[in-house]
View (cartoon, rainbow, N blue to C red):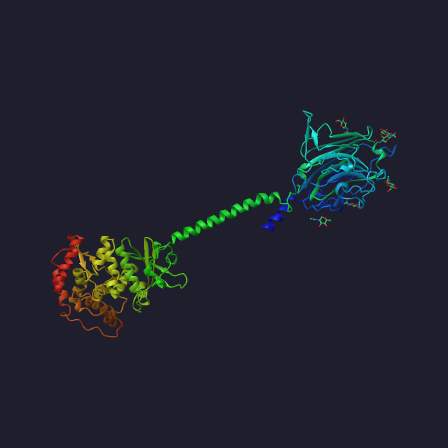
Length: 632
Ligand SMILES: *[C@@H]1O[C@H](CO)[C@@H](O)[C@H](O)[C@H]1NC(C)=O
Ligand SMILES: *[C@@H]1O[C@H](CO)[C@@H](O)[C@H](O)[C@H]1NC(C)=O
Ligand SMILES: *[C@@H]1O[C@H](CO)[C@@H](O)[C@H](O)[C@H]1NC(C)=O
Ligand SMILES: *[C@@H]1O[C@H](CO)[C@@H](O)[C@H](O)[C@H]1NC(C)=O
Ligand SMILES: *[C@@H]1O[C@H](CO)[C@@H](O)[C@H](O)[C@H]1NC(C)=O
Ligand SMILES: *[C@@H]1O[C@H](CO)[C@@H](O)[C@H](O)[C@H]1NC(C)=O
């Protein structure tokens, strides 16, 4: 990331265009990228196009020259002609108030400054040659240290130097305001870019030096103005350049742009193309980074925040409830998330059935690809909760190949879901029959095996009392269960019998009577009626179109009647039922005596019209029938 940004930075700054006119009379550098300057010492040109004369290392010097020599003298009479120089510079010290030592613009006879000294000599002269006329040196110094030896006025001055560092003329760094004429101080080490103009008038032998902040138009009044005939100083062939030197303090002396004109004004420097000054710190940072970094950071923080919110929301969506009793049965517990995913978020298209206790969904477990039924139970009351716990702790331990196996459960604040596995055997039923009906049967089947802790109990305490569910469930309740409210394995055999009949006939335990227009017919009675008339097979579901094993259907119908016998004692045990169904034990031929009490119950049943009574009455009536027929 940072590497990329860095690349971006390099590209965005790019190399500044070099505009050096081939004409010997002028040149312009608006930045120094790609330029042909002659450099020595610490001088470098940065990738950004900045001429850095010193690199921050103490007691060193650096020089930069326009590569080609120039002739400033008139070829006819030999006088130095008028010339104009301007440059943009900046001094960056590690300290805001102290810097060393300074820099110069100079005109010299050659490029060899190897003998020059750093620090107060500014890389221009040395102890021996300072001030010697044979130096043929003209310079403008930007001095940031007061050197008493050279009679410096202060540590922030501009001076005109001839052959040495004792200035011919010098003054405080600053400029005269065009309007007020007042002097405005400038701080050379302010780390701000400033512009200098050096003008020489060959006729008047006048030297003007002007200083101003960058982007300010050149002040009319020069900072320094003196008369000095440079014809007495400069050689025929001269080199133009810069020098800079550090002392004890780590400073950078930089030149951003430069132009020269002979017998004309120095061409304007393109300020927009100038490179940036380095920052005061040891590692210069780009503006791009300054802008991009906060954005990247903000984006990162925002992303992180969003992720946290998403995770929290997911946690909340799949939030579950855990209690002490669950520790023992921990392995049975499924995460709500897994069940939510298995059923596609409990979508209606996966709904297998709906009972008084809740809804049952078909699902596929993600990891094991196991097909499961997921029952969603609402437990509004503590009573319901108790039953739920009882169911889990009991069913969870039972395993039988003919049973719907409870794989586990899941609990969630407000909502709980139980999980049952559709046994192979019942899967076939699911394939041939109405899925919704078969699902209800599965639940009943499970109840039968679980007795007191079964789902019927759970249903009993549920608050859901929708009439449709009640009627549907009513048909499964054995007479003694209606009377005593006490479930037993045999009450479940009764329910199983009803289930067998429902399955084979394809009808609800208590069905609408189409013939007499309204009214209800109890399925068991209806099948029994047909059995007595010798037309048992007519009760088989017409939707099968005769595509079934007649013997099997007869077996199931008869077994259904036997199981749903009003006398609990007359019903076979569940183990026996399974043996009959598996064909291990043949079902004994039913004599009318075997079902005599059945018939009696049916006769009693006919004494009232079910369509005219309300639900609570119906419960009472059933109870009455049971007590009559059961005789106990
Ligand atoms: C500065 O320049 C000198 C001489 O070229 C070099 O030895 C030194 O390592 C440089 N320092 C930095 C910080 O670039
Ligand atoms: C660079 O300067 C050298 C002399 O210092 C010269 O020979 C060369 O031609 C120059 N190159 C360009 C591109 O100006
Ligand atoms: C050089 O000097 C001669 C003689 O004084 C003068 O005629 C000429 O114009 C000068 N050339 C320039 C470029 O000023
Ligand atoms: C000035 O420099 C020249 C040449 O290096 C030398 O001969 C001369 O003695 C120097 N003058 C002084 C006053 O040092
Ligand atoms: C120097 O500045 C003075 C005052 O503005 C001006 O009259 C003169 O022409 C300038 N000389 C040069 C060489 O620019
Ligand atoms: C050379 O010519 C210039 C004009 O181009 C003039 O100003 C100057 O005084 C002349 N120098 C001499 C020594 O005649």
